[in-house]
Amino acid sequence: MSGGNVESIGDACVFGIVTVSDRASAGVYADESGPAIVGFLGEAIDSEWRAVTRCVPDEVEQIAAALRELADAEGCCLIVTTGGTGPAPRDLTPEATLSVCSREMPGFGERMRTIGVAHVPTAILSRQTAGIRGSTLIVNLPGSPRSIRETIDELFPAIPYCVDLLGGPYIETTAGAWAGWRPKKARRGGAEHAEIVKKKFDEAAAELGVDTSPHKAGAEAAAGAAEPAAEPAAEPAAAVVQPNA
View 1: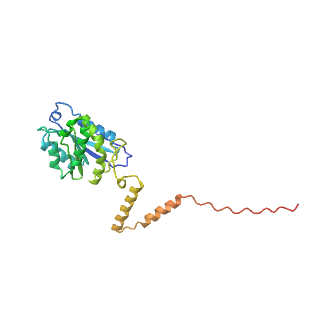
View 2: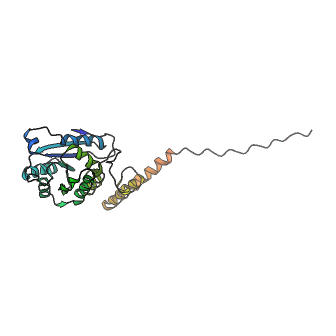
View 3: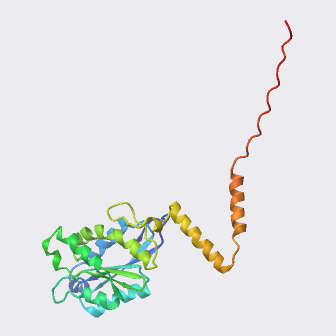
């Protein structure tokens, strides 16, 4: 599963999707939640991307093993889980998530519950959370396709910049409610970002003792060559002497 725009200013991305369900993993019914997330990615992500999916039972170690594989072996910058976040005895996705993460990101869970209660009062029963493993962000989403979409549209704007801060790829989104938000200095394509890139290049060159003046001179010369040559000033017309009548 893949998608995106080959001409996007974003980087290529790998996303992980883990469906947590005893019955779906046993083949009792088809997984609908994972495909719903893939559908969202196809609509919302402009960067070239591919998705790696897993469907596992509600067992802490199997969930944790899938998360470790997707983060460490597959190199996913973002992993989203679906299912297993309620208060029932077999709802163990948050425990598995935190067991593989070095840091928790509680703001994601807080935001998801706020979104959820606008639709159903039982959203406060959700124990969804998020965490960081290396340079990978792991986020627990709800279990139903409808709830996934209600949540991810409002949650996703914070995700691309979070991935930036973890040293991951630049995720470029399409226009929509899900569009990624970044401070101006972190946005690609603008004059401010170009100036930041130039400054970092000059600093790196200075540390390495590389003289960039020939490149600057060449650029200035090219710029000068591109400008049309100024036309010579016209000579004043000679005065015409009229004969006396």
